Length: 285
Image 1 (cartoon, helix red, strand yellow):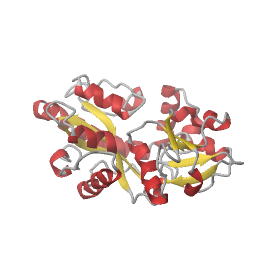
Image 2 (cartoon, rainbow, N blue to C red):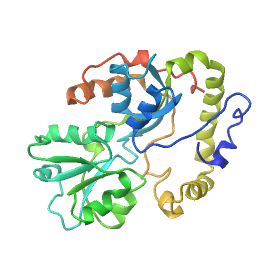
Image 3 (tube, one colour):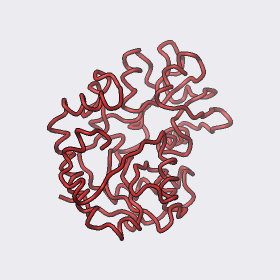
């Protein structure tokens, strides 16, 4: 929605609501802005959303209003960890004694590692070290020997594939398909801006359909807007190498399973009834 040509497709924008888009490096930063009342709707991942609800981090609370994408969908990309082609780390068990990187500690991507650590009997701080590193820096850090394993988002995974890096494991190995990233709104925003959110939801649903039908245009616009090679975006966006992102309606039952899993992983302190913190009213067709 930061791309001008995309915004032009949002029929209600300007007349029924205004939209200002900002970017953050990790979802906890977005949550901090929501807590401060600086942002009305934010893109959150599983752990940041769960912590926000469980800890009452945002005054008045939040609700999920749309799913952005699913991780570990059987037909699509799942967060993948890679090592160098000549590395002896080619399976999860090989990570013993290794330094592994995620884009943010205490995030949904971190939870992918934690779930695998539990599966293979590794304990961070004892026999594996987890460090924080931005997605764009994973390849350089691997090649410079600063880390042994890096976790890649879909946008950056073509780098690893083109260099024939080893797949150590991916999220399909530890998760059944689940909603990973979502748009969440402050409850105060929902209560005070029903008409605006309804108009935004209509635009959002139509926009998803437009993007699916006009992929080549969107790839070109995104390349220009974010100064990323068009071939890089084309290599993943809306292909099997991208996340599943076709339905904005949040699967409440599956989300409950995710939250329950995060409790068992120790990523959040306590669970909750997700049905009380999700609304699909704005994105249902």
